[in-house]
Amino acid sequence: MIIWVASYPRSGNTFFRVLLRRMLGVNTYTVYPQPVPNMEELGELPFDKTIAAAARSKHLYFLKTHELPGADKYPAIYLVRDGRDSLVSHTHYTLADESGHTCIGGGENAVFNNVLHGLVATAPRFGGWSANIRAWCARAAPTHVIRFEELIRNPEATFRRAIRALDCKLPVLKSATAPEFEALHKSGPKWFRKGLVGSWKQEMPHGLATLFAKLHGDTMRELKYDCPRVPESLIARLLEHNYPPDLARTRHVEHLYSGELPPDGVFLGDGWFPLEASDGRTFRWAGADAEIVVTAPTGAARKLLLEVGPGPGTCGRPLELGILDAEGRVILEKTVAYRTAVMANLPQAAGLAVPIKLKARNGGIRAATDPRVLNFRVFDLALAK
Image (tube, rainbow, N blue to C red; front, side, top):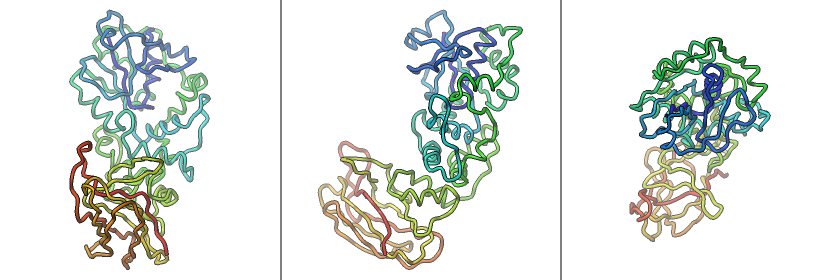
């Protein structure tokens, strides 16, 4: 028999499994090939069966996973945590060595902020924070949800409620108590870092907190976490579209982390496909239209420089490229037969942002091997005098 112990990473999974060992006297297993090392308190054993074989067995397998759920009907304990704390902790875990040493979050730490940015804005392994939670909470099989904050505040009572909810008639040891977090931190600092609630407030930059609220606010509020609705934010939109390393300059993205628009910054806007790489070069594909946004123009930079190439959408013909201002007026029209540099004068505009549209005048053909329309791609973009 299988009981899933599931969660997005850094949401209390390991602590709950310590409680299984301490309060039920059972071992736990993991779907991952490398278990947590040297933690007797956890009692984790190698999982040497297939999922199907374990499900048929009379032995009870408490099986850890961070993956998205399948279509099985096995019962599950699912742990959730304030996503901001979870993603900050996940960033520390990603950067930590086995002794738990890592960089300090927040502020000007570019490495920390860039890793955190990727976890907030993209859907890497495990589907991303919101998608993982929604998938597990929506499954038809019995799934008992535990909030990390309640588990930390009152571990014994929260654990007992979870075991009762499983309805598996598992007797909790009468004299069992939860271990002190300090002892767990000492035995496994990488897995038990702080166990605090709300530490994201000191470690998540303002710009990324705004982006998190935009992308994950609905999920947070459904889980009854305090996450106010944020108005449409240019900073959040640009952070959503520009994750370093990307075509936008890293120094410009770092301004956004602090909640500021950089002078003469140049960013990707709407209409671009995700970053790709080939032959050592990175680029972004676009279909019919794609946006570039220049922020806080000072007038010192007067030209937009692009390295552009046609795509399969033009069916081997040169790309007829139009560059337009916010009012739809033509700044430049250019025929692009191969990857080439294009220079266009910036429109004279004041304000916080100058949107510029790149428009494919021809194309629109889908490639046989790709469902997207790929009319052109941009390898680099910058501003110049």
